[in-house]
Amino acid sequence: RILHNSFIILPTKILRWNVSKIEDITIESLSILDIIHPKPDILVVGTGSHIPHGTDLYFELQKLPLGVEVLPLVCFPPQ
Image 1 (cartoon, rainbow, N blue to C red):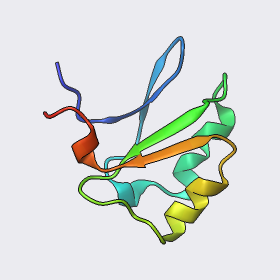
Image 2 (image 1 turned 30 degrees about the horizontal axis):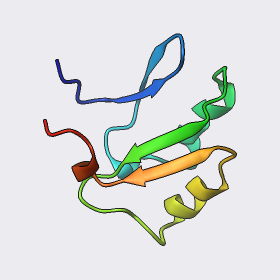
Image 3 (image 1 turned 180 degrees about the horizontal axis):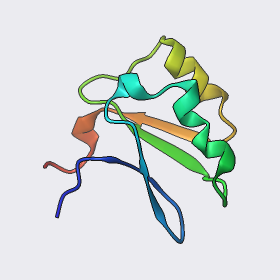
Image 4 (image 1 turned 135 degrees about the horizontal axis):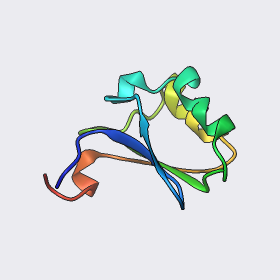
């Protein structure tokens, strides 16, 4: 079964993340990373057909204290 949602996947649980498109990712939506435990080691963001290099979001993601992978949708398995 394929799920078309955003998730935060932790070792013992999966949390639904209320983000449905790259434009929904904001500093506020990333604040969930401050309250979950254990802290994630990496954040993988699927962006659709493009990577938003040079945007405010891109620079904010680079400031996070964890590894960040920003990948276009074509890097994920076909749906």
